[in-house]
Image (cartoon, rainbow, N blue to C red; front, side):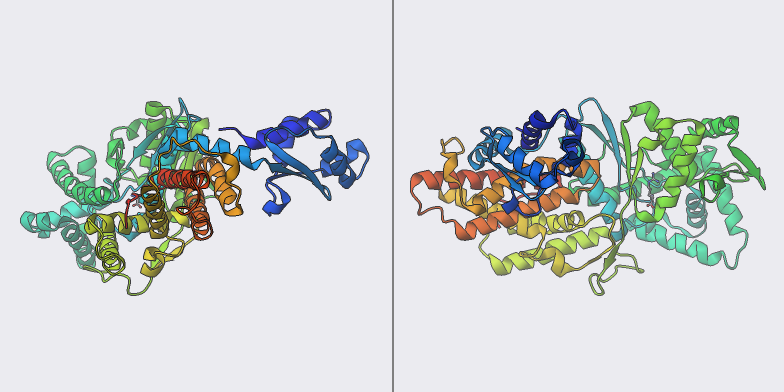
Length: 567
Ligand code: ARG
């Protein structure tokens, strides 16, 4: 699509290329806070010294000198600023044609062609509940994965399962002592959790348990067949449970290479670290001293030779570089692991890999559940699956009330209920902690998923009623109401928001842009009649409705949400 900022920069450049380079002009051109002041503004302060004139005077002179073209309607001087107004008819034409061409892939591009980006997300721990705390990494990570793909990157989704570590030694010991296969298989995660809790309790009476657990984990690392078999069984059962949640969310991974995948890759990595001289012996264990970098030491091998979480992350990064030759390696993991990521990235750099800087920790804040949101199943953990199911149930009740005659209510309740949770996750800036409430999530008229989906259904209904075809020829100049131009501008900006979301690894840019478009559409809907207008205006407005609908669909599917036609 035509880049209008480029157009503005070009016009300015023609006049002042002897003073400022194009890139500098580009950096200076901004979007004014108020659209009354134009669509782009150029502050003239930087020219003052070279031209020996006040910025205000320069702005006045430039406003007269600059040659307008078909994209620019007028150039105005306002104090030290030079304000550019885009030609509305031209803008409308550009935007509507672009949507017509790209439809529900509007905003997609091939800017990432030939570059591989790994997005690691979700990564729950085997034999532990897939709980509400995992919701953010799962949903944010999946959205980022889709965003990278949309922009033409070769994106790879990896689930770095927590399927290794001393806790498996504990689980094996506990299971061998107190477990029963049939009972565990009936309700695996809860039963394994119970065994794990029991293990810790019994540790108070039996001081040998810890040693036994270490022993069994060592056996697992050494490939003992009984240990391996038990571990595999627990992993399979857990994956089955996790997959239920992924199915509900419509999420897929390209790879489930979890921590265990790196067990045979670690000896070489640890060896390389020794050769580099960055490992220090410390009471039989090996550590990397990170004090010069202002961080506590990192424990790499324990005294019995077994490895740790951080060792596996180092091995994983190296493997990924060798295997995928990534351009970026993105980890969607909570803020509580900031230090962990800083430590291992530093170590990778110390081993001698400059690409350590391309490993990016995309961190996020915590979700708190408002009191009474969920009654907990067993113990005090809130299972993610239960939250999703409850969202669907509650949405169905809302639909029963609002629109009892709706066809396939159950399907719609699922799309809207799950969509509500997803949207709520992505609308918030990921760094912030937030409190989950049903009211804020499921409401049809706040800044919510259901609100946007409802807007989509509304647009759809209008198009059906108006017998619309996107191939109708329209007169672009007829769309001149401020509400109409407002939508056009927001749609114009949408592709840029996707790029910003990618650059900052922050899907909320996409969610907020779509929310803006939905709101703009609803104020258009409230002030611009359609069906009763004469054909020219009616067709043009329907074209705008169709474009809005297509862009909302593009945006929501980018975020992992569905768009029911009716709701
Ligand atoms: N399994 C870990 C947890 O649930 C998250 C793993 C994050 N990824 C990583 N490469 N360390 O806390």
